[in-house]
Image (cartoon, rainbow, N blue to C red; front, side, top):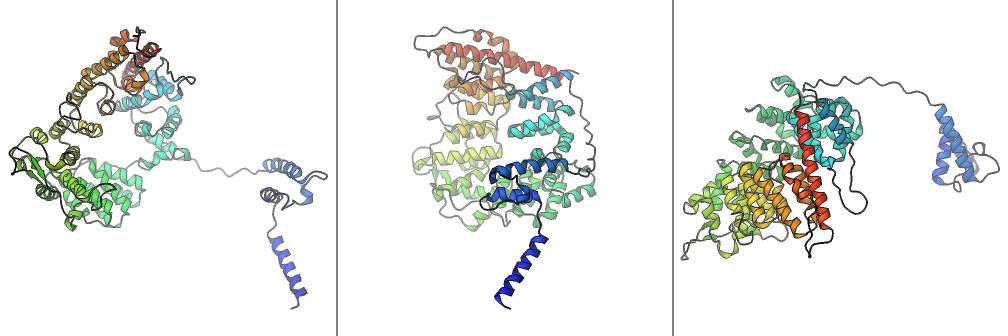
Length: 552
């Protein structure tokens, strides 16, 4: 074949291809716009004569946009969705419904650039409390507020658990119809209603064929019924589950953890996933009578003992020299994080997994308070006490937590308890609500509010009388000293949400503008007056909210 013939054949083939791939005028315009009119000039029949190519392209695009819209064919109607499921909870009282609409519509923010919040309550901060109170009374959400409720939950992750519970099955049904609300389907049962846990056939079908979120919700629902049904369900597919799914399923066993879970968790210690093994070991160590807890106690006992060489009572520590295969199988992670020594890392893991009761026999029959007060040789005190703190939190041991907290009036730096506020907050969470409030109240009375914010966050709401009065007294002292209130804005915000609403009348005296001492910050008195007025108005609004929700 000559070159001329080949060229002709190529041209013919190209023409055939171009004909087969003929484009619409709109596609020609889009291609020219993307490439630029210098590189790709649209066909002359699409362009107005006598105009520059870019301008002519825009004119043609405007014309064809109207043509495309005018010639748009109607889409085929989709099938109607299934009706929303029934919600058997009681209707919300009318006044409470109006209040909810107000809370969802509020978009208040500090005015101007001064940072002053004024005296009006912050309604957005009251919405979580309103939802919690409504859920306690088992009201169902009015259908009209469901879109606004889901929008609020989409914007604020802290709202989601309470908002989705309040939205109920109709909220999940609605979330399936809007991609912007798909977050609601992740944390719930996939937007579907779970079967009756007594219907073993339906339970088995959903467990084998359901979405992951549905299966997690199903496992939790079956577990609340007690017995071995949840473990049997989990064991039936355990070997075929993905590692990340096994980890999530295992984590769901934290609720209602008991000795009946031990055989399954012991098997999980041999799992091929390190994260699964670590979680199984953590759960077993929270069971003081488990075989793993016994093994950890035996290992820890070889590391911590009473000193027999000195004249006084003291604790001696000899950290492990290796992390063998058996230790690793029981959840001890061999490689420490950066900046941490291997031996101290291994020691901490052994002590935190050992039952706390074992230390009283090991350390001379002493009480937890006496053990914590013992001196620890060779600068091991911080490491040992930190491990005991983690053990007390894991095992929910209130007596050990109290001993490790120490006296609330003692200096955190020199007292017998742990000096870490983060550790103290975790320890406080294991105490009964009343004891927790009393300890924090005494701490505030002794040390003020500057270090109490993290501790207040774990106290039950509304705050008990002594705790609320301790907070108000400390704020009053700061007010009299002439400090700026925004130094205490975090505590003031907590007080608005956590003080007992019945305290509002007792705070009236603090709403007046105080006389400013000579060394006071300029204008601080006016700021404090606004802050206390806002506190009083917020407490009264919370009282009204509770009254509205209590109406028949």
